[in-house]
Image (tube, rainbow, N blue to C red):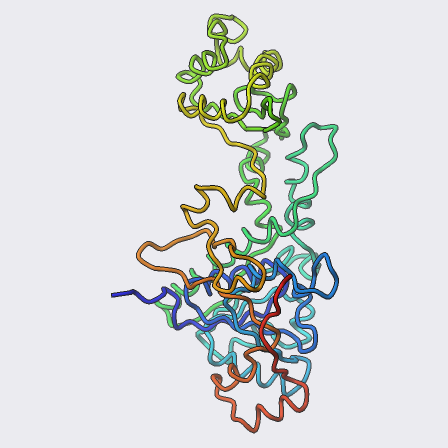
Length: 410
């Protein structure tokens, strides 16, 4: 007999915009939760149409808001806020990343909602945390996670290289995973206590967690060094190399005692194992630049497919520096369902990115299209117990709008 989705029966309000907050509710929707996305009538949240072509649907919106319902509701209006409060009474989780001052102004803080539903889990995500001098400061992952926490500085190619800007949303998705973990922990606690609670995470805290090894070294009094590559790198056996065909790969020899002779033989230089410059681990570190030059000359003499076969046969750990464009044809990516078919390919893609956790014995909900703005407004309000006359008045006043499906992305 087919098992129910693990989160079937949970109702979730997504009162969030852009990426990190909606990521957490996307994962909940993947596992069967009913997720109701609340947006202002008119244009909805800015992420809907934030695209390279102004005014067109956003390709990225497909992944961060799939399988959700949309309620277009004006929280600034008295009637709209009252309807929101009635909805809160019927749900299990509210997720928001609204700036702190806006939450207070709209009267949607945890304190505003907790008395309406004692079982409510209120999940908050901020740029810099809930307290402290920067609690009300806005920020995206590129500034609060990547730049602020030292990550941008740590990954310089050399100390003379300018810091690298992170790709869009790179830190938002992992931070959304942290929020999802916090929500599920709170729901587990609710099973034992019967009481909901407030859970939080921030982009800044996640950035520090990402670089926890380096941060802890610093806290223990050790100097922080950037992880430089090439001749400037401290270890030729954990470095990046280019092949004759232009492809780059990362070499990581962790068990040097066993694998150093195999690697020397692999590059056609077995005599290196008897060379006093490279005979010990300490010597290889001291002469890392010279050893890098030897490896570089070897690896640039053959194409990547040849080196991949040789490295695999020698059981040496490596990783191709892949291209995003290769993922949809990657056999391992497809075999592991890291990319999965979309239930509605007409909106712009046959494949989409799967959430990176699985529960064996359970299938996830098929990745359905995101909702159109206000597509489910009337249905959601009916399910919350609002009568037809009240819904009609909300529609007439503009506090609520009813819309159609998500448009096709060309």
